[in-house]
Length: 129
Image (cartoon, rainbow, N blue to C red):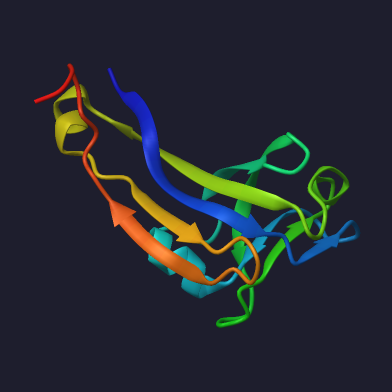
């Protein structure tokens, strides 16, 4: 048995573009992807803080250093330029790995997609202590 857990999250990214005519996916600055431990073509969920829309897509690399976050294809109809989003990826792990799993959380400024903080911490099972 495996458990699906949060692997990484980019929190409060500002969408910098939306291209309805592109084939699909989410374009991210490779520097943001690297800091979160996310990979090109990795499956992600995008949670739109602004509209409440939730989509599932995959990542493609944009221009390094651009801090771009661009929705492509059908996603561009739901998640628009200027929206604040959370980009999350997940992993399947065994129950024995849960106590030591450390998701990576990249907190952005919500304006220019500048990294404010990178956190990595264990999941706690079974209460305080």
